Amino acid sequence: MSNQENFPTPKILRPKQAAALAGYSLPTFYRRKNDDPNFPRIVCLGFNSRAKGVFRDEWIAYIDQFFEETEAFDKSIQEAYQADSIINK
Image (cartoon, rainbow, N blue to C red; front, side, top):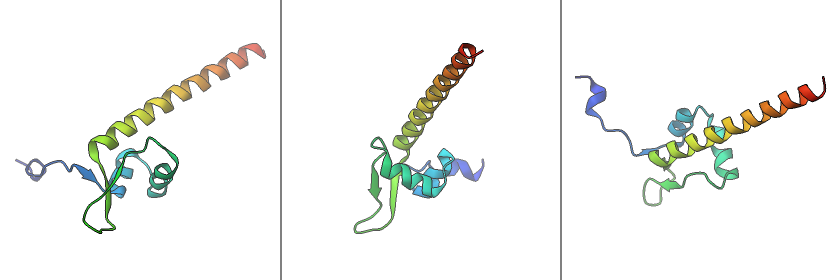
């Protein structure tokens, strides 16, 4: 039995952990927090604490939705480019 099996999965991720899970840099994490209204709720980790985090399940749902939207957008751009190149031939 490995040591990994003895520890439960964290329910709250610190910003650095959440950013790494999504493949973001920390500044990108905070930029998305400020710009995106669908960004998961940031929670305080203690009373009167500067330590913050996001719920893991909410974060995973957010990045899944974000990447699905990005893939759909990329696909529509690619289709538009192909249609434009056919028309301009």
